[in-house]
Length: 252
Image 1 (spheres, rainbow, N blue to C red):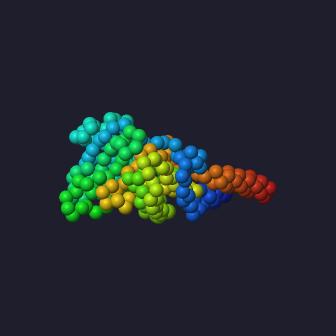
Image 2 (cartoon, rainbow, N blue to C red):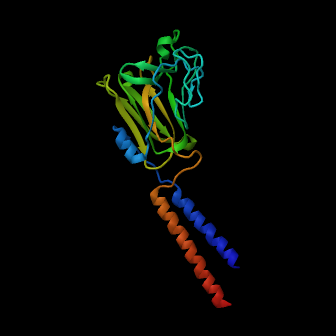
């Protein structure tokens, strides 16, 4: 009898914990400072995309496993790209410089871009989108850009392609100086983002991509409020078991 009571109380507490851990409706906030994003979300890993040029990245996928042995500028050195994140774009008819790590235009070292419009045969390929996919759910991410991408859109998604937020920018005075664009969630629920510029020649150009590469893949960390509710739930479960034990002993 006591074992059944314990099991009932345990599963009741487990249900309570699961409910407490589930994030409420997340809110995506914009950040214009990398320091502010890091302070709010813990996102402190910065991908600099190496110090040189590597193009074209045939296949449209860049991650820590990409070597690009035939790239102009030489292969991508092992360990150059941070783990637990993948950058990808569409592959259309053009097999030229549609996905590249380039240098110059006031970017420090390498930056990730698409130059499909310059290399495509007429008619131009459709605009390409940079999709950034995280192995572990994130609370925030951000990147630097400049006049190469002064009109662009960022869509933020959770699991199951759930749209968490959509942001459009048209900044005519965006010059050669780098400007930071960051996005932070009230919960660890960001699975991927899509970035597309309006320029038909340069669809995207990003550098210093910021996220949290230290998060364990395949698990999520409960929010502080959830930890409090979880501890409360286990405390109530323990008290219920002790109280039931006293009742059974008295009855005996």
